[in-house]
Amino acid sequence: MDKSKYRTEEINALYEISRLLSNPLNLKQNLKGVLRILSEYLDMKRGTIALRSDYGVTIFTAHGLSEDEIRKGKYKLGEGIIGQVAKHGSPIVIPNIGDEPLFLNKTGSRKAIDKENIAFLCVPIKLKNEILGVLSVDRLFIKGVSFEKDLRLLKIITSLISQSVKLFAEINKEKQALIEEKENLRHQLKGRYSIASIIGISDRMQEVFDAVNRVAPSKATVLLRGESGTGKELIAKAIHYMSKRSDESFIKFNCASIPEGLLESELFGHEKGAFTGALSMRKGKFELAHKGTIFLDEIGDLPIALQPKVLRVIQEREFERVGGDKTIKVDVRLIAATSRNLEELLSEGNFREDLYYRLNVVPIFLPPLRERKEDIPILIEHFLKKFNEENHKSVRILPETLPFFKNHLWHGNVRELENIIERLVVMSSDNIIKPSDLPLNMRVLSANSQLSITKKEDSISTIEEIERNIIMDALNKTGWVQSKAARLIGVTSRQIGYKMRKYNISKMK
Image 1 (tube, rainbow, N blue to C red):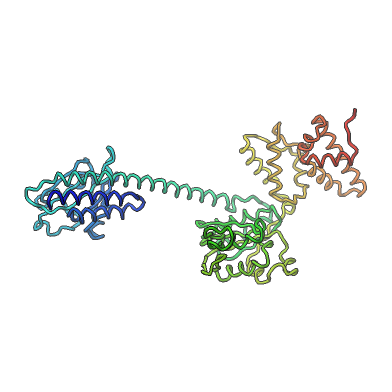
Image 2 (cartoon, helix red, strand yellow; image 1 turned 30 degrees about the vertical axis):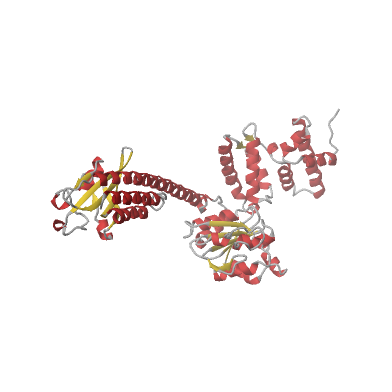
C-alpha cells in the first residue's frame, strides 16, 4: 500500500472508530467493530482486545477468532506477550511470530504458525498511568518493513478505547450500586412487611397471621376486610413480600381516590391520542404490576361500569388500553381490600355478583382495635419508641393514663392510635404523658365507659361535669387563651367555643 493511500485509509479508520466509540453503553460490540475496521481499512487481520484485572488479563472481544478460541484467551500478568504488555505497559512488536518463543498461541487460532509470515503488534490500553488492557493485531510480515506507523496509529486508537473502557466501568459501577441499593431496600421491605414485624398478640390477630402464612405462598386472590385503619395495606404488603413474587413490583391503587372518569385509564393505561390530553402512551396499574402483585384498596368503591373489565383481568389475565385494540396479557396476583359491606352493595345492585365471588376466594377479616384491646399496650410501646426516635425524645406514659387508651372506642383503629401517640410525643414538654394530656374526647368517652353502670341521668350529669372541669382546667393553664386551650385538650377552637357556651363558661372578672 503506497503512503498516500495508507494515509487516507488511516484517516478513514480513525473517523469510523471515533464515531463508533462515541456511545460507550455497548462496549463489547463497539470494540469488536474497532477490530473489524482495522482489518478492513488497514489490513490488520485477526485482532483481540483483552482487559486487565487484579488476577490477569482476559480476551474481552476479538475479530477473526471463534468463540471457543476467545474463551481460551486468559493470561497471567507477565505471561506471554499479552501478559508482558498488560504488566509493564510498553508496546511489543514481533516481526515474525513463528520465530518468537514468547508467543504462546493460547487460543489455538494459528495452528500452522511455522508456515505463516505474520507480524504481531501488541499495544497497552492506558489511561494516564493505569493499564486497562491490551490491543493486539496480526500483520502480514514483509521483510524490512517498519512498524512505526502502525504503532503510532494503534496508540491513538488505544487512547480512544481507554476512555470508553473507563467510562463503561464507571457506568457499570453506578449500575451495580443502584442494583445493590435496590436489593437492600427490597430486603428492608421484606423485613418491615413480614408477619414478624406486624404487632399483635391477641387471638384475633394470631388468626390473621395464620391465614396470611397459609395464603402468601399461593397464587390465590385475597380479599382483606375490615374497618379503616385496621392495617389492610400492611397485611397486603406482608402477603406480597412473603410470596414467590417478592422480587417483583407491588402496585397499590385506591379505587376511591381517583375521579370515576380517570379510573379506567389509571387501571388499564391509554394509547396516545385516546382522549384530550393523552399526549403519549401510558401503562396502567395492571400492566405495571406484571409478574408482581396489585393491591386494589377500597374495591367496594369501584364503579359498576368498570367492574366487568376488572373481572376480565382476574379471569382471563388480559385487557386493552383505553383507545387501543391490542390485547395485553399480564401475570398478576390480586389482593383487594374494602371497609364497606360488599354483601349490602350486592343486594343493592352496586356490586357484581360474579366479581364478588372472584374476589372472595380467600377472605381475611382484620379485627377493629376495640376487639383486640390486649394489643393496645404493645402498640403504644411500639409507637412511643418510633416517635421518640424521630423527635429525639424520651417520652413515657404514666400507668394511670393507660386505662383511658383501653376504654377508648378507637373508631379510627390503629391509625388513630398512631396519630394520637405522635401528637402526644411532639407536644410533650415534660416527657410524661398524663391523663390530662389526652384529647378531650378520649377522657370523656373513657369516663362514659367507666360510669356506664350508674343511672343514665347520673352518668350524663357526671360526664358533663367532667367535661366542664377539663375545659376550665385547660383555660386556666393557658391564661384563658381559647386557641391554646383547644390545642391542649385536642379539639378545635370552634369546638371549645361551643362547649364554653354550652356550659356557660366565662372568665371571672
